[in-house]
Amino acid sequence: MYQVYVLNNTVGQKYIGLSKDPQSRLLQHNSGASSWTRSKGPWTIAWTSKPMNLSEARKLENKLKRQKGGLGLKTLTYLKGSLSRMCGTAGSNPAPATSFPFGASSNRQFASPTHPRNV
Image (cartoon, rainbow, N blue to C red; front, side, top):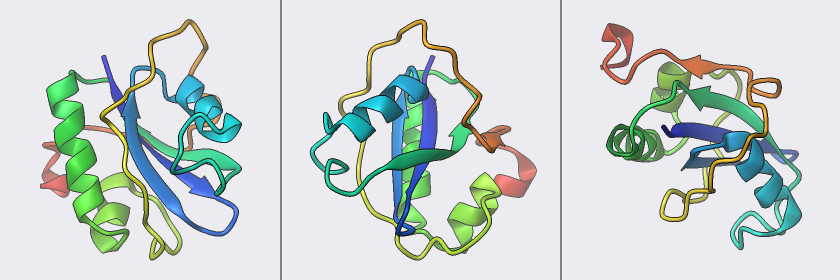
């Protein structure tokens, strides 16, 4: 199962990606393993989706990226604050699953991509 995630950095940039284990993927982003986020961290997880299959996760990831950080992204994820500095791509190289516990650094969870409020 995969989860879509939104990362924040200290200057207000956002990064949307998907992974089997967003917490270990965050460690990769902060350690420099991802070329796009390497020099823009440190990153924190602002939001994660519920676990879903890869096809659903990619559809949701692309839907969030199409929002360009505007009101649509805030509505879909319930994130607050300015999202005007949306950037980054992910999803073609999801991190492998590990036994690292998840949830402690996540502030929001997505209920369903077909939730009436999100359609």
